[in-house]
Image (tube, rainbow, N blue to C red; front, side, top):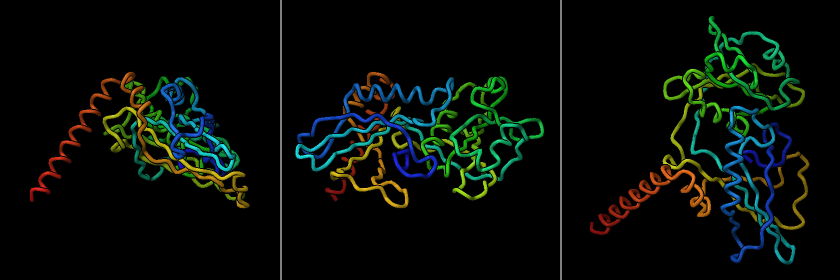
Length: 291
């Protein structure tokens, strides 16, 4: 769900993730990844957000699904995890700027041109019209970039939109990008309409970094566990997901060990912050007891 779980016919709601078989856990309730699992996720995340190659439509973020079967084959235990940079992006709607007509922009005007996930870069020409550039277009390395465009999605709530914007936010070269105050940039969305409906005008947003879930940590793990009875529920007649995951931020000791080795500076900062928070909490509790 949300960040790209499987199922459903809604554009932008599907993403591929490796399925890793595990033995039934001793407590019968929780599954956990290994250091090797999370190392592969970190590598996959770096590949996914690498601006030197096209953003993958099927795997825009780093995900894995752990699965174990009960001995009596009565149920499956699933744990879906996504590893993301500790980055939150806030999108604010803007009045749309005019788009300079081009073969690329004109191909995205009809609904048929928005059925496939695609993204690219935005720049401004002299009359302040937005110019769409393809991901591999040579001009993208020769002009100041002010943001990204995305199509093939029904809403902003998709892994592909997030990955396209997160990838742009990682572009640090000032000669290449022209971000606004606080790192703000533009997002132009050519929304995919429901079948049979006309394509709406593209929607423009200002995207700016917001407070991260764990500000001092380099990455955040999102996960959710679920027991699924066997045989699994039949597909719903409306085409929606039979099993929907809604992950939340979580912790993993193997991942923490891996991150402390790969990003020692960020891990040390996070440890100091958590220690300070714990000390402050203890002091508050002691004052309340004394009172």
